[in-house]
Image (cartoon, rainbow, N blue to C red):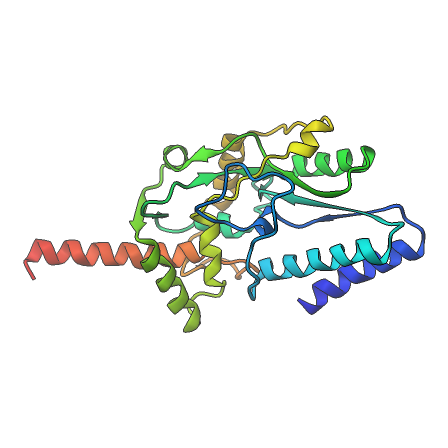
Length: 271
């Protein structure tokens, strides 16, 4: 985290020193927080509601705080922050995120009584968003995503994956325990981002003429192709090194599936 913040500070300071007119940063819509009460979609000016943690989300929040201070410290320097939804790219790039790990789990974790929705952003659409932000001189925060959202049912239909449904309290307590004993490398709070909505509107970019070239179904297909052959067990891949982000859902889904199998066996044997 210190290295990430130091790099961001160096860029801002250097930009101001050479008289640059604008700094553009890419963080994530995750900083807006994932919550069952979130409207769908969240607008560009939605408050930053995510809670700091020891993972990548905490890094992003620190960088955004630095950029907010930069606006006050360097009034001649415009600051633009793009907050994309879950990023996907070409399958060979295999962008590794908390959401991509979710689709490497044995089943898709679903929290009982929670309406999950899914939204993605292709890296090419993000790049075009940066271009529009610069050429249109857009300041402040901008969200970036494909149109609309996918329902949980549609995601299961497109992926061909089955779900494991658990109560929220059990899912989060399991993630917390696994993280505490070192089985789960990622913060348990990551679980919220594959369970609760955090879809965004891209309103300000759209008003400036930006349009995404990729829809959510296409992005999901690219994500699934990119993770094909990878298997996450307790958020750890069996065939390559861990990335910075692990998926709490992979571990919780695994534990939940095992619990379901045990209960079924007990019923079958009468024990």
